[in-house]
Image (tube, rainbow, N blue to C red; front, side, top):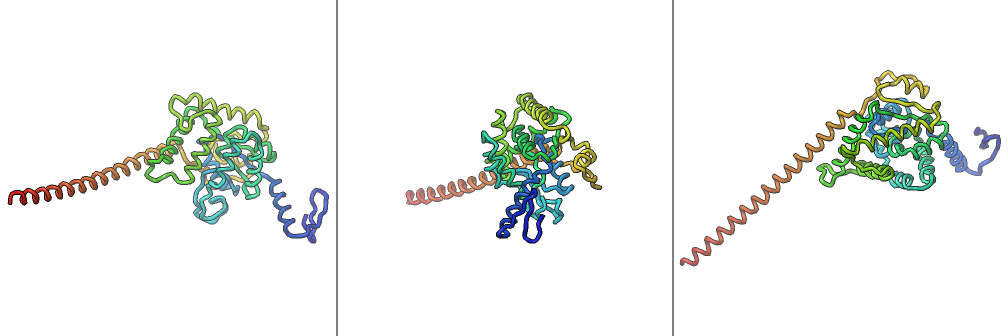
Length: 315
């Protein structure tokens, strides 16, 4: 309670000497509240849709190396920051340190910082690492945990493989569009996660069994380690009902979002490949035309000089 410049916390009273003490105490109180929602599902299990759904329910969502521009000033859009791209690439080094660390200190420090920055929900990579996911679940005991799952593991692998092929094309040095900071950060954090798993960054068809085993083991470990009363096993096809009931929220009138579908990701991969092929084809045509013109000019000049020499020799 704040009254007459006094602060009462847990039955104790103190009289801060400056407003700075109040600000510091407010920060501690904010940290104590912690995350309200922790998403622990693998990529391509409906995380983008869940992010959008949580934003619609007025949660401020943290999703590393992902983001979108807000189209309005509504708090549910763009993480509550109008007209900004919140991809959190500035946090990349901290996440890499947390993944590589043998203790929880870097992760705990980063998680507390994110809470102080006002985020109420967190999901996506690297929370698909079971150790990181369960540490956050333990550190924020009041948070509700959402495990997004694909109904078919083999279909999940096919979608995930397309997603990673798309990322590979996007971050290639030969990409016509160039690898921006967001895609580069996403690639680096995915590389760190796969290093922990001992799996390649971009799976081949023959890697299906190993990837599915890692995916299913993570899901099983989460179900075994997280109190069932705190855990929602969820698929986007279920819509608002189970999610809103779990979170104690009224169902929005708008349909549940369905983003980054397998068809959309496949189309984007094909578009990128086609774009790159046409771009480099155009570059090659331009270069051939340029050097062809230079060669033709050089040959013409050579012939003219030769003709002059021959005429002089015949005089």
